[in-house]
Image 1 (cartoon, rainbow, N blue to C red):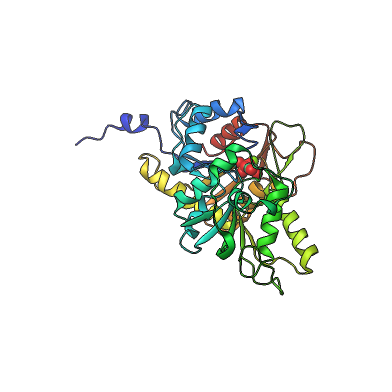
Image 2 (cartoon, helix red, strand yellow):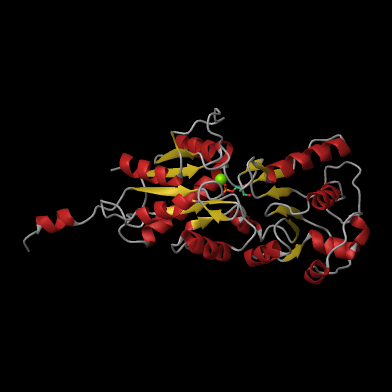
Length: 347
Ligand code: G3P
Ligand code: MG
């Protein structure tokens, strides 16, 4: 059959690059969409002069809701469908640990929402700080649960309960009470509620879904995040026991594991959406936090064959005029500028 060269030429080329977006400080700030984000995604979805569609995924350290629910929120805010198959949040990798630990304390988020997330991941026996406060009212001297909190938490006889691991899924809404309960468990005999270890070496491990000390909301200055809670817990553990806490682990960016996971999510996403090819040669990572987004992207770039290219935006944690602790490959004002920059560079 004769080859129609004109038709081949007219066919838009499938891009060999992709984008990965951080969320807070890049697309969303204080629950509101950053206006440039909507146009940035429109461009990637084909509204560009080359007429191409560029694949993208979302990699946030945030959390507190099931992935499906968060993607439904994002779809509404960003005015484009967002699939859980292109989304990773701070606690997504914790899913893998559901079979490892039987009874777990899950901390953070609004009300008991993170219990729902953990149970959805397959964790068999999920305890929350609310359950402990409802069942042992003297555990937190200055907190009285509201009627709603009492209704949502579960009464239980804790005298024989052993907590096998602590998981901080999302930002704590009650730092003082959560810290008290966590420190109690870290200092306990094998995680047994209400006990004190003599060595302080036998408490359960604690997993944080990320380690961001600061994050960007709609407030002028950056706000304290989960990394700050970790600092506090480590300091108090050391102060109380004279020993360093060696059982704390953080997931999320900048951990290499998160970027590896992002690679597999992106590969699958590209493969399942024909025209995108099977993998991207360059991944533009657009973030606002030098310590997590830029550090992680640069370190991962050094480890893998494909190019991971860090782009820092000025709409979040990074303050223009300061020297970022980890140097991005490019710095631009907004996520829209980042998309235009990457597409131009890879043309
Ligand atoms: O609590 C979330 C915040 O620390 C960071 O979220 O989207 O900027 O990774 P993100
Ligand atoms: Mg961010």
